[in-house]
Image 1 (cartoon, rainbow, N blue to C red):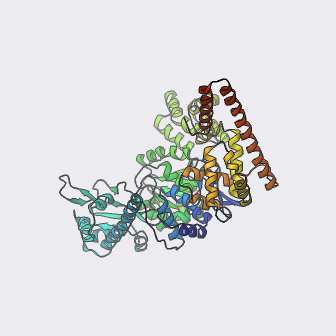
Image 2 (image 1 turned 120 degrees about the horizontal axis):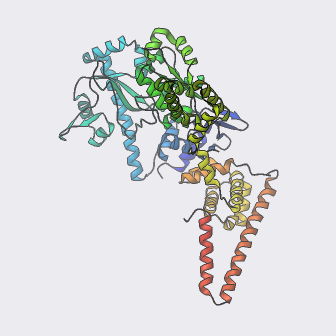
Image 3 (image 1 turned 120 degrees about the vertical axis):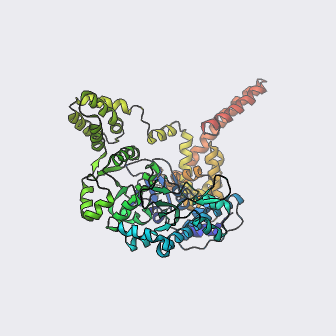
Length: 590
């Protein structure tokens, strides 16, 4: 074990699953549980459930489930020991590790080494900006951009000197190993392989924090017309640009309070908004918005507003991003600022109230795409056809049928086309759409009756210690057809040492994430007709035993007849065939 079992139990007992999940998902109480929009798949209607009583989460849409550790692992892409340590830090628990797997130990140490290095580099760049004579131009530049000292301090803005070896020298003083230096992305190997040079030179440097307040990477901006204007860290073991958004570590509370997040393109756009009191915003780090970005943001705000420059590049960037939000089922507004303005210049000139007033008039997705297409193609016959071709897929992707119908009507009027003709175009565009829900439904079909009974039995077993004791006495698990459910049931029995096992504790005994998700679903299952738990459990047990004995007797009769007929090959074939059939039906053979 990497971490002692009693320490894992202590952390789980101290942690509150609602508190842990609330850092990433906006939850509302409904009955005994809390519900929110799932961060792991696209949905509009909340199907993500958190049980404070059972200390687990489960999504009824995609099947993701587990305890506090499982959530951190899945949400942040961590291995188990990292999730344990993260949760321990959150609750102020000291963790002493025992002998660990060398591979896991090496990976963890490397990631932690990168985070430590990034923190020191961040402070180096910050101190350089504050005190170095070489940073005078950078200080003047930030002052001209109206960035206050308070903002500089809060976001640890720094400066990379106009030198090829500032960071190389800093690494040398730290006696940093070659592997960690290269993995940081802060230095670049020379073409002749005879050393390194600095990636960031003569740039204002912005540390990029993840939501856990750790420095994951860096961005740098020139102070003149040099290109590239912006330069970001490459992908590293701790920096994933498809998940991280600039400023979210500071703005996440405001996003949750306001219920809306403004998404801008650049560092200065974000900093100016934040400095002027618009604190519910994030920046995209110069990369295209991804599904992961939107899923992360869904945990903090139910509505998102894209705020792009009024130039052609800004409009095109907004247009390219729309599909991502449609796929994620997010309420989206698009704010195109007046000509010649970006979020930075607009809020500096007009202030917070004017920005929020403009944002209140942000266009919905379909009207925005329609106007963009009209501006591009015009209202000639050919133009109308191209406009419809441009937007039909987006309309087909609107899940709400009433909203889709209204959009069809509005566009038919805008283009002067028959509503049925527009509707037909949209229908043909939607033929090939495959949803995550459709996939999950196809996976669920073909479930055996025995699976349902055995899952109900396991659900009662997980949720009630008296049922576990009864199952143990009667050896009910031996009568299960599903090898997987029998294996998990046996694990439940082994883990239940004191008759007070929680589903959250059980998950720590399971290494397989699929088994953990199954346990979560069973723990959340409401078994029909459970007015009397004892009667229901006894009835299920008797039913399981009766059906298994009946099928086994039928098979035994067939084998016996084959043997009496002197056909030993047939008897062996029948036995092997039946065993293979059971395994196939339960997903253990293909």
